[in-house]
Image (cartoon, rainbow over all chains, first blue to last red; front, side, top):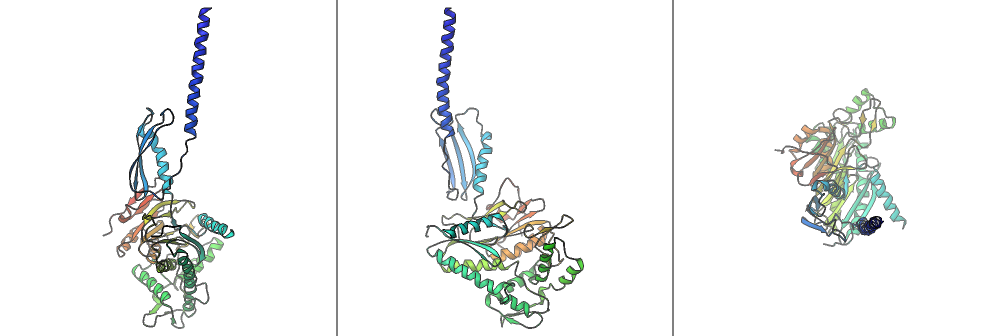
Length: 134
Length: 324
């Protein structure tokens, strides 16, 4: 009987511990999920090498440090310098960082050789007409 | 420099869409003046306006000289220069051939060989006689006529920038139907970033070139074309020596040069000349860079673009040997 009570107490304690743990975990997850990226104006970047740091949320689980190289006004390289996640390797981040480089690289002032019928032009004309409406 | 919001405009003129962005205190006035300049130039250079100077020359073909304005004279002189230095790749009298193929587009069938041969005999720039003293020109044969397709937009873009400069603009660009020409840098000092149209994917670009005080013009086989029964692509850039759409192995040729008239003419010329002959021709034009794309969508750039060209989506860049 005593054994059963002890077992129950242990199970209860584990359960409470798990629930409390989960509570903290989900708080942290939520925080990470709701992390807002404010957007960068890629047209206004000064050349240089910059180190960026994120403190990693309430438990510092996602702390990491990245190096960003800007040349001729554009991001040409991003490297993960350190991470509190022992599983993170620089290679894991490459795909993600490449997407950042690609996204900014698509920002252009004008397109050479675009056809007269190309949708881009039609869009531009459309937006001009929209403005003309006001 | 005034760093306030730029003035922008999109207008339709010279058969194309012209969008411009201008920074400066007098940006709005500059744009307005540029719009008037487009109308004025179209009035001189369009062969589709019966009162234009080009129409006048065409109507007097085989009959008499026509006195022309300094602008028309200048553009014809430049066209003549390019015809001479790149024989077989550029001809300002190619208009009858253009019309023949334009009609063919409607039926999606290439014109008859015999018809092409007959029309081709009318294409000959040496029949355009220019009298520099009188600023008058004469087309020798009846049935010949001029078209400024491969040079007019670039010429006009240069004049638009000239108008901007009159209004003390030191940062601007105009995109003259795909011919891009820029003054200076962006107000923050960074170069203008000009996308190069992807030759096979209408909604994307294949690369980006950074320019300062330069013009970028691309000629490609992806505009105004039809696919024939044989699955062949009949596009709008005609080889004036064969009478057929150019088949040089290139699907796109971009020129980056100090003037837009040079970039316009040379992009057409290189597209027709092809990779090897084109690079050879470039030797006569210092400070001129090229981006050439072949049928397999391989991208080749000249040495001078190494630092200012990037492709998107990991397209490989091949750097051409130095031009000596």
